[in-house]
Figure 1 (cartoon, rainbow, N blue to C red):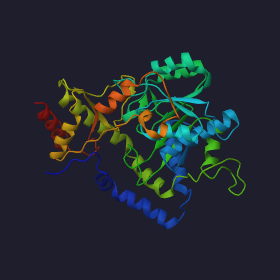
Figure 2 (cartoon, one colour):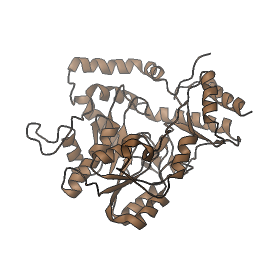
Figure 3 (tube, one colour):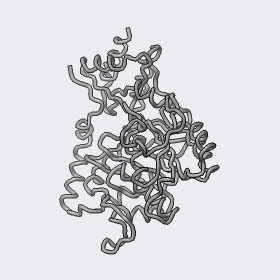
Length: 381
């Protein structure tokens, strides 16, 4: 029996092979490998799609976060980096890059707990920390985890009340929305990843910074090129963090399909919801009426401590599954002595022991979706 992977990138390549091959050939012909015409074209098209003034391609989603925070430090403090006393509130239930970017920008991450239904940062916990410790907090990084929007109305209200910046981590949610606004266009900066497994991914690393702030955009464009407009006379401590021309060419092709693929993901999620409802041990993903979920991952919770057992059963019948994430950030060694924790983070810790992500390849066949559903239903019988 054929295996069902979490994602089948080769199938996606075959689906758009002629266009991707042509895009790569054009790069081979023009040989403009550094900031070639495809980079600017991609920036302009995504800016139009996001309805923002500026998009700047960069080397990864992680670097997008670092670049955004560095630019904010230069603009708001007149310094290359934040100080360790500067605090940025974020979620502990995310990939390490979110917290690591805060450290690399010089600030201290403050981890507050998540909403157990959405897995996203809990605005009530943000407010709880600020009521006691608002003096050094400068910003919030909400992470739209698994493709699900955070509760942005409340986060915006809190940020406005305490004069905080919002940097959206949209690595997993390209094309997602909160109300009628694209995720990544709501905060002062939105940060995207084009890692191959993302909803919009390349054939390697890549990222993008989106903003309506002219000064932030100018600073990010300087920082990606070693820190200056003139690379032989730079003004800031910068990086070699440009988006590769070849990646931009590939992403331009895949960008044509991202909305359709997001709809296909939503259709698979709907089939999972229908097929897996009614089992006491399974909690299905929460859906906001205000949000457009793009299901970078379809993630269930297993309340009965049988995750490892179910994973093994799925593996035996050729179905891949993954745990995102087995360790919340505050439990990682890199953050020891370098972060703050508000109250307990019991929901994040509990989620790390219960979540399981199922295959959600946009080009999955209907029978493959039913195979996953039937395998789980059989397990729970």
